[in-house]
Length: 319
Image 1 (cartoon, rainbow, N blue to C red):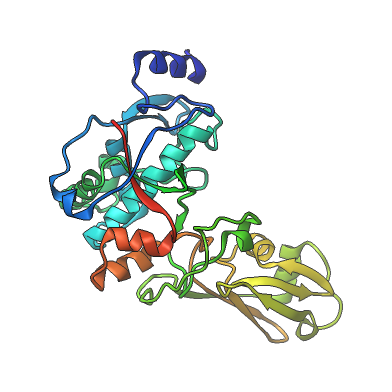
Image 2: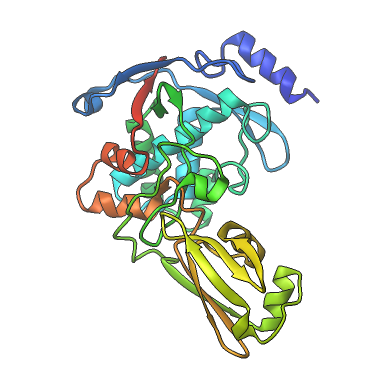
């Protein structure tokens, strides 16, 4: 069986990969002129870009970018969302994919997979229909992808880390607070109108014994004495919390307790510890439910992207 690297070299030789892109570090050529929203409706069709997609069985296939992104948006955002929200999702997903090409991505070779825990979620049309999606939903999503074809987000001329998530619970989070790395365009911003999201708020209760097992330690004294001082991030998430005399970060606890987000509060009784979370996901970048709320209120996809990725430019990739 041919290796991914062999396929990559062949594709690069044939000119089938992203125009202006070579895997493993070469630059992606971008037109740095801002896009004029007035010209969007008459934007000429471009030759579609290509990418390497890893199948669930480990194989790798070449696919055109817009077809891939249609599958991503089908998996990542409900077709019932407003068209402008779907367009914003398309641009964010395209930017993420192109960034993977230029940096090597999670797999080191510029390819992307179908696992949302690694890259981006992805559904074939057949899988989408089997999950209850409709042909009209497919066409609505495909239209959003094609309406933004070739558009990516840049900051100072470079592709951004276009992170996104389900819902914020009212505010997004600074990247530095979650991952320890500062990005000027991934700052905490308000994200109102998400109350309809399934996990805008959520609560889970565990016994003191279950809580200690999750922390993999025994805590001294009764549960009411376990919890100490709490500090918060700019986005309202837990920065640090003292438990049993030790300091934990909000990110640590989210992982240890399998919480929906780092924006949480704790209430304690003798026989139960209840943790209430706001939002779902890492809360960095674009809130998908927040994007839809903005679209319902009349914002365009360019305005949505400018809100969640402040200081970035919407940039057209050169064919």
